[in-house]
Length: 186
Image (tube, rainbow, N blue to C red; front, top):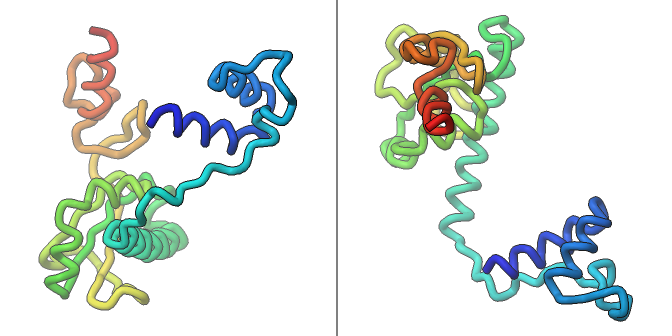
């Protein structure tokens, strides 16, 4: 698997990082300066992936996640224009779904959507509470609210988190970054 990945990556990066790709290709395929020029990475065809079966279910899930991201991004832009937030990382996004199937789809995907949208916090909620929601234009039954994320800004990841300042050893970091820094220094 690693051989196949490296072979494909070298073919793809050859036009950009030519010397590095050529040297790595020679080592990967046991070539030397006496090898025919036709065996160089610059004459190799793009990698074939016909033996990798498409996963329609995975494709559909990602298509749906990316359409959610698109709708969230629109709301983030509106919140930025209205001066509710400065950057996307300043935001906490709340998702409220009217549809049970959509709620089930969102369940457990909050962290992934948070990363996809590059926001500090993303939560699914069952009721509006004090947040101001706007209906999604593209996704029926989806309502999105954007508000400033609660907490302080982590100096390492720049995300806003309520856990910033709770670690006495690393007061400027969120709990996730503090754990990473602690593991690196151990």
